[in-house]
Length: 178
Image (cartoon, rainbow, N blue to C red; front, side):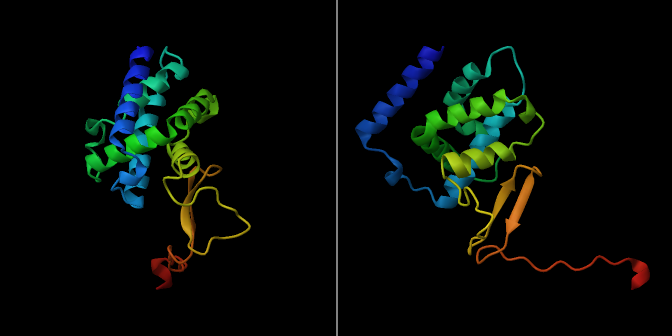
């Protein structure tokens, strides 16, 4: 089975090399690439978080070879063809790094109860750079701001800036104070 997967991936890469298709030929916007990466990792995570008798290092390559099919993305708000194109592009450019990241992540028993947001942050921001806001330096807040996943709280942190505006929260009052 792995031999077939490898051969099919090899054939796809040869066809892409012959036709001259690369990331420069892609019509993906940065937002489409980011959303496609996030959807792809979410689909990978949805399957990998369940334990089976097969070792994770055998499951990951098989799953990676089938995840980029349009049918996997029909339930997303983004056009499935955009997600499919983004998926194929990140797999082509970063497949080996994504595979090793997934294997390492899902081998850790402590990761089983975490949400998929941690692995999305790792792959889409740090491994593939498909989404802006990779590693955030906490000493220097970016002028543009951003939304980043916080591994310690398993939630998002919002960094205000020119791209991210927030109103100042007001103190919650009760009806008696009115």
